[in-house]
Amino acid sequence: MSRPTQPQPLPDDDDPLNPKVAASALDFLLIELVPLAQRITEQLLAREQALQEEYRRSRTFNQTASKTLVGSQQGQKKLQGGDGEEGHGAVGVSADGSSAAAGTSGEEDGRLGEGSGVTSLGFPVMSEKTRESVFWRLDGMGYRVGQGLVERFSLHKPRPTTPLDAIKFICKDLWTLVFRKQIDNLKTNHRGVFVLTDARFHPLSRMSVDRRTGIKGAEEALGRAQTFLYFPCGVIRGALAGMGVEVTVEASSTEIPTATFQIKTKGAKA
Image 1 (spheres, rainbow, N blue to C red):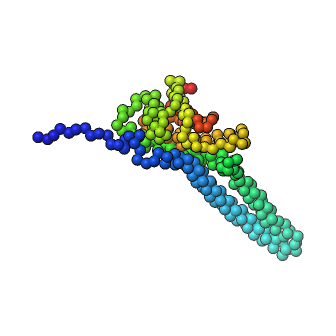
Image 2: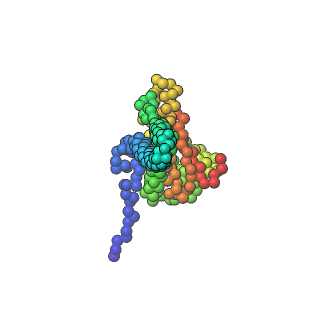
Image 3: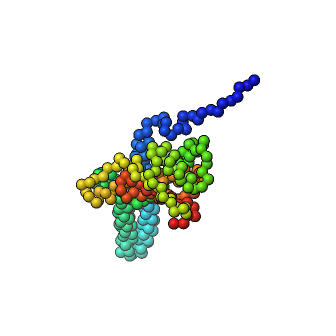
């Protein structure tokens, strides 16, 4: 007779409190994600602007060469007819084209330098174009991570049946898995809008603030803190999408290291 099979215990890999790597590794990864995304974005933007500048110069050169050639031909014909004064005017086209090109190049250099500079602590300042590109890059990365985490760690748990149950999973299980603590406060208007507050958000807890510069230093720190919320927003959005809940996520920080995440489900009423 065959022995009755006994239920197998869950593998240790499913226990979020039993990590297989150092817990600080994820903290350091989250800290380095923003500068890495900024460097990649600035390199891509610089390459794009260089290609546009090269194309513009080649186009300007071709147009100037064409105008110069036509002017030279007209000047030669008029010189042969005994009128040599008009030939000098044709050469002026080349000079005008060159000066126009120089002016456009100066404008392009001004756009390339937009957003350059550093904060009081030496951190590079992001331009609006760079900040937007960094947001989409980090939000997309977080979205894929959130989906993977839900698929991996909700396998042996009952699937949430309502958006509120899904949000509670984010506040307790997912936040403990990623940040080793639960969300400190959850509020909802029961119409599809949820506000999650983490009073000590780990990626912001190690952020430096220049107290010597007063209000300016605090504003610079809050501006930098905003970029560190892009990835967690993507994680929340991806995790909820993996549970069948479509949402939009906005994050803000009014005081370091506090972070607030506002989640709106599809069709929510404020």
